[in-house]
Length: 370
Image (tube, helix red, strand yellow):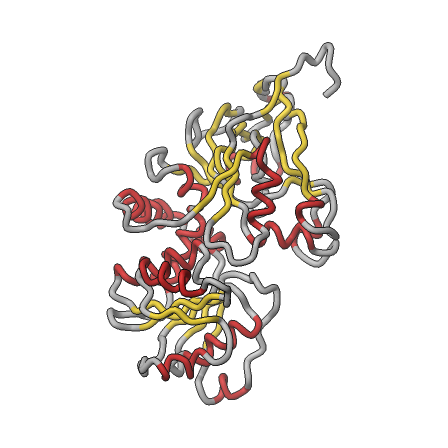
């Protein structure tokens, strides 16, 4: 009943919050370049916590490609197009609970949480979120930088765990291989004795990218152009991949599908290229191509009991330094412009993280205008 109809404010004691103007990255337009459409502002946090709410301090938030793309798309062309302007950017983060409101049962002050729902607006220093909209993490599971990238590590884990019916010696081909998901897939493949075929965009220093991906465990590193299938034949890799992992779409996804063994799946888990793939009819009729999508949030909704074990496993790998990801961090309030510029650069091989060291400023409501 509470979930459906809510709780009357007069039936519980609201938790009073301090008068603080917190930092947040507001999206003010969806028609310009992200560096001109997103700006750091200082806004008062809510005066109280209502039933089931918690005040959290965002500690680290990643800048994802999808976050940048949404801020530059025309109104209504994406999920973010339906959000009111201005709205707070960001979709992932690691935060600590500062205060808990009435009705909160599973969270306490000091707990670590990550967002459960999309579009919660994570590029900010303080936020009031509902208990049901966050997932609790053990505070010692991984360093905070990795906790902020937990969603991507979980995606990599599930892609190999749930698809392809893989066994040692099988090959897995993945595009966007320099992404955090790609880095984690390559390292997990090495641990599982799978051959990871890393596909990445062409760049001037591709030889350095190739050496780096191979140091992570990639068997082959291929430029995302031409025919991947023919390139693998040139390299005498005649056992075709049994699983293709696509985060780009469009022509890149078609190249992955062409390289697959007949009857094997291509799993789409991202849309960096923002274009749907169009597969030739022969892929369906002759190669029995299987294509399906994957959503981690949907998986977590359907498999809540498996989530803690998955995160515990990933935490052990990170702490043992068997799972690593490259990142560069910037302070939210003072270095946001530099962080956004870096995140928009082509060819970077690092995750851009926003770290919160300064939560904002206090004010006296009697003398200051909120």
